[in-house]
Image (cartoon, rainbow, N blue to C red; front, side, top):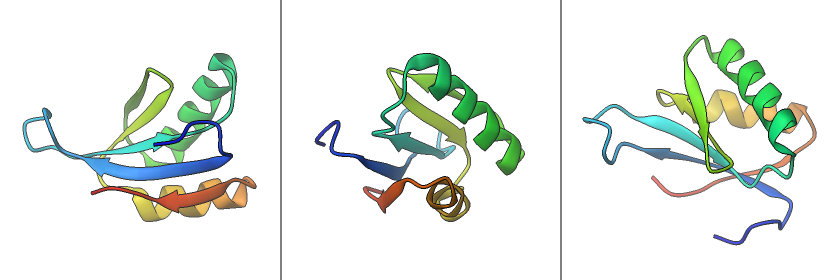
Length: 83
C-alpha cells in the first residue's frame, strides 16, 4: 500500500488475534506525538482500547464506519481498504 499519498486507509484485521478483530488506520501523515494524540481521541470516541504499532493505529473491534466518519470530519481523505 502506497505511503504518503495523503489518503488515510481504514481496514479490519483478525489474523493472529485469536479471532478478535481490530480496526487498522494507516497512512496518517502525522509525527509520532500527534499520531498518539489522534489515537487517544479515536479510542475515547469508540469507547475501546487500542495501540499504535509501526505508525498504524489499532482500535479494538470493528469500528470502521464510526472511525471513517470521524476522520472525515477532521478533514482527512479516507478510504476503506482490505477485510
